[in-house]
Amino acid sequence: MKQKDDNKHDKPLKPNDKSSKVVPMGIMFVVLCGFSFYLGGIFCSEKNRFTSTQEVAKAVESPKKSVSTPVQVKSVSFPQCSADFQDYTPCTDPKRWMKYGRHRLTFMERHCPPAFDRKECLVPPPDGYKEPIRWPKSKNECWYRNVPYDWINKQKSNQHWLRKEGEKFYFPGGGTMFPNGVSAYVDLMQNLIPGMKDGTIRTAIDTGCGVASWGGDLLDRGILTVSLAPRDNHEAQVQFALERGIPAILGIISTQRLPFPSNSFDMAHCSRCLIPWTEFGGIYLLEVHRILRPGGFWVLSGPPVNYENRWRGWNTTVEEQKSDYEKLQELLTSMCFKLYNKKDDIAVWQKSTDNSCYKQLDTLDSYPPKCDDGTEPDSGWYTPLRPCVVVPDPKNKKSSLKAVAKWPERLHVAPERVADVRGGSDGAFKHDDSKWKSRVQHYKKLLPALGTDKIRNVMDMNTVYGGFAAALVEDPLWVMNVVSSYAPNTLPVVFDRGLIGTFHDWCEAFSTYPRTYDLLHVDGLFTTESHRCDMKYVLLEMDRILRPNGYVIIRESSYFVDAVATIAKGMKWGCHKESTEYDIETEKVLICQKKLWYSKQSS
Image 1 (cartoon, one colour):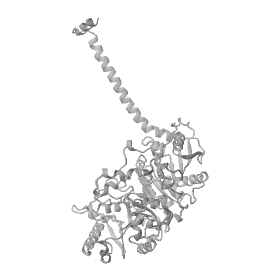
Image 2: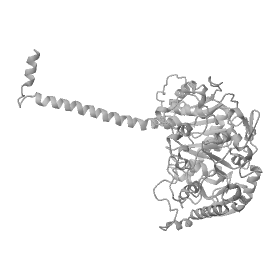
Image 3: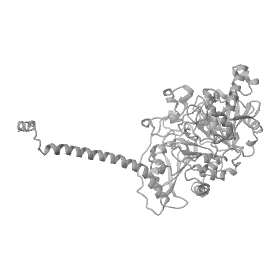
Image 4: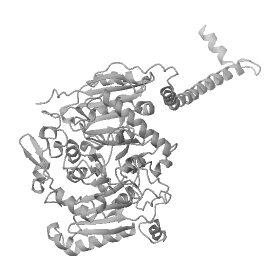
């Protein structure tokens, strides 16, 4: 039988044999159907990817519509990370620095681990961790066991950054350039810049901040400062700052722009921060120029300022320091800065409010040139630095320092740049401002600790105009306003009203140490970002940066809230679900508290 079949197949087919057409056509039909099914699957999955969040958003907006079946997740219990992860900063991890270049210290920039290397464990506190000292006492002291670093104490003790006594670190307010204390230093600065006294200057950035004593002193003077420092051999500058209750973020001016929009800060400061301002074509100073609003001030103390009297202590020559100062002055002039004031160790330059100054950059041989590569001036998320001047948009006439209302009036005045936001208007701003006043009143009923000294460091994880922060401005706290790098760019509005914030992508870890925030606020984050970011990893990151006994307010669609609560339980959070101030079924408020626990591996 087998032999017969073989012979049959060996015979040539006749031209009119039907099988000669049916077999190839059948194969082709199967292939085409399979390929169509594959393409249809891709199309549908991509379509669903972008429409699912829109459908959920509609459900939230209209309480009359029925809610889709809520997301369900299985119960999970996350293990503890090992004890050596107690200060784990995923995207600025020193253990991974050797993988990156040393040029311009690029290894200290953000380099997040690949997806397969993300940790699914709970970061433990140090052995002996205690509930942080409350504000305002915390500005001057903190528990040693909460930030157990002896290196910075030993290396900087002669400069009076801090000192260790018993179980505490104390912060006497010293610094390299303010041996008489930070208050005397700021007093001199205020004499040079009168706008620091009358509400003209409200926001500032301190590059190379040490333990943030400058930013801490300014808080008492109504100026809100972002203290910026890399994770470097000082170990924990930013962690010390946040432990004290002073705003700070991990960062470095290297090869990427800082995560802030253009024309944002009223003042920038460098006190012997050792940034080589005139090197690499002045690219670091160009970034300061970008983020400083027209009329804003740049303050420098330390080399090469006052080189005539200071050069002997700088291991250099008076000729070298004179040359450095002249280069700096020439570079600043080319960027339309003018020397505003100078006394002793402090020099102050002011960014021009007159755009006609930038016409000098139109000549072919001018340096630095104007930026004309199409990069958005406000782009500040993984955007490479460019050796060019970002010229302020001439249409924003009311964004200069002299045109913005003084603090505190500017908090509730609709900024000019709200019109640059899609759908933004004065009316939308006022509505948002009013909405958050009523929401925060409701939150304080659900979480009585809000507004007391139990909560100091707060983050609004996906703000729009900073309404949540504005509604809390009278309370003894500060708010880091985060705008998603994928959301409409509303961060300029946040800064224009006298608040601080940063760009961020919640698919990645935030630029801070563990245990640095008392309260995290979320408003529809999972509804808007769940198509991109795994909810589990976002919540694990929230757990990393939240202090033990800290709180979380999650305002979310009913579609997600139960799933969030399930994951939160696996992170040792205690949560309870509450109604919103409108008491609608499609949206709920989850109030959670992180429990204090210690690593089983602690000795």
